[in-house]
Image 1 (spheres, rainbow, N blue to C red):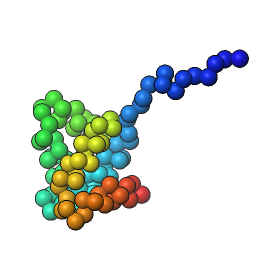
Image 2: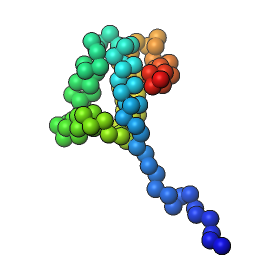
Image 3: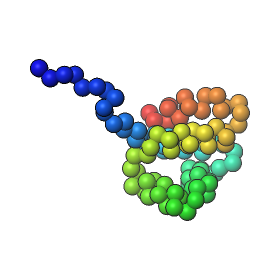
Length: 100
């Protein structure tokens, strides 16, 4: 009989589906008066990053590859900065609804 595997031995997979990032960007575009659409949101996100990170994020966007959890967290924080305070509280919920 083999011993049970310790869960702490399993590496954490902190990637999330790109569709979640798309939902966050769509919510920002819908709720923020700063942007005319999703393309404007992406441009603003990429402008905040250095050249190497911008290239990396643009590649992820083009290939629709998974993103890391910390990148998703940065998207949420960016979104909460961009939307009017009255809608910031339910920003995460609205992003979730955008998924379907």
